[in-house]
Length: 184
Length: 201
Figure (tube, rainbow over the protein chains, first blue to last red):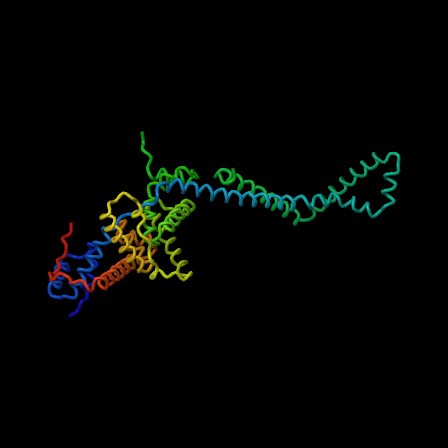
């Protein structure tokens, strides 16, 4: 005797999805087929067992424990973000400032290679004023040289635009993080 | 005065208000914990998994589609997380099939009387033992069906499968449980009466 589609129909019957006509056929089959009848009885037992199973609850204070865990997780995240923000800011500032500082200091480094000039500068009675004038002249010269270099070099402008964009983007990101309560 | 709805809490939590998420945790913690317990069978691991489910839900809140049921969405996260845990358990050679499950956590409470306690202990141990023999995806479908009364469509949505796959898993899992019950009680004589289909409604 074929037991199909009756075994499938039993599951559909348990889910309340069996058509009335199929239901009648299944009932008739269960009256004559001992094997399917036995299966149906066991499926009913399974159904009863699962339907009667209680809903298990967590220990009291679940929400408080969750809130504590969320706070701990967020403080860890903040710490990591703080390190990231600080590190990235330091590196970014160094990348921007270092070339400028080196450019400014370069004339002085060149002076070190000419001891006679240095001696003259510091031996002279008007050494202080002379030094200041030299420093001013050196700064002016380096700024002028940088300006001249910048005007004639599109790459420099590209660098400036990139740095400015990165700075704006960085400030915007920090503001968003602060607004979302991640940083502050 | 207008009452605060679930969607209001969700909207506030999505906007970054941590305190607005607490009422949602309070409301659904039993449902999520029960799923985790039924899937994992161990109260401490179930608590950890349930907490992790809510942490993930909070982190992914922006991805939640308000057109869907929030409960089904949470159960979906919990179910996937539990399956991941069970996979890891397998990787550490702790077979799910051979895993003896601890007793129901409620059985540790002193409130029920001794007779009731024995009955509950037996029932709970039997259910957990039977559930533990199922493959995790089949177990997930059974729990969603019987403990949450979710429809085929809702289970399919929560598990990321099709309705026919859900039906197939449900039928297979029930068949497997029936086989286990048959083998467990094969020595017990059964009544000779013919079964009758229960009347619907």
